[in-house]
Image (cartoon, rainbow, N blue to C red; front, side):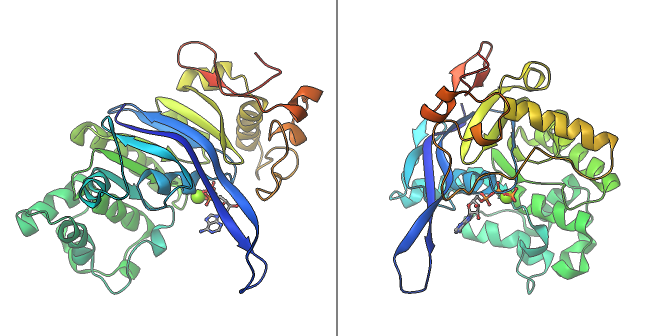
Length: 315
Ligand SMILES: Nc1ncnc2c1ncn2[C@@H]1O[C@H](COP(=O)(O)OP(=O)(O)OP(=O)(O)O)[C@@H](O)[C@H]1O
Ligand SMILES: [Mg+2]
């Protein structure tokens, strides 16, 4: 495993007024373990607010978890060891969900790309190196003097990928890499991601609510619900032999929305992450829930060939 996380937990305090102590906690990530093999791709899916971006930010060292551990290349990453943390941050890069706000508007593309080199104290042949990186994401050097507002959405996303690539990382975490783009550009960016993965021997964690994107790019799929991974399996197993009713309803919703206009989604709203249901968190929306689902939390148990699911009913 190149990158792995173990039992991660992150609760965000909720304050009812400025001076008061926390009146509650949002259970954003609640006991997540995940393993990313070298040069492979994991897809992370789940409804809005289930904790995907928080998990991604912990995995690149931008958010400190309340509990749990991150391992890179067999070594535990310690937050106190700044040298190790810097090396880790160089190796594991993130492309942010919101490319429109991901850059400093006062920086030209050149400065945007040079900044990570400076921070990581990497010496490279200046403009030739940047030209090569731009080329690998399908941009030409004339873009170097433009500001973020002078770029199209697709160009901005390519600059985001280029910025992650300049420090020669081993892992890229891509948070909704194509959701803000129109369909024709989406295809181009997905092809680009496949090309650069091969070229730079990268491992990916891709967050997307679009199962078509996940199906195309990923070797493994992790399904997240209210701060927990409820199913993890090789791609084909998720699409053909899933166990968890939540995974099944996500797949069904994706099929239905492909046939009709407008997203149909799953029945009802997800419960508040401030007060997740007891036992299985999906039980309040699950048509198969039994008494046991309310009383006992299902653990992620092996279902053969790397497949794991957390469900009492479907075993
Ligand atoms: N800095 C923060 N402070 C307080 N709450 C936060 C913070 N960041 C995220 N949250 C809360 O944590 C939960 C998980 O948020 P997160 O952004 O990880 O979800 P997500 O799965 O990425 O959603 P989306 O698909 O909409 O991007 C949400 O309820 C969110 O409101
Ligand atoms: Mg997000």
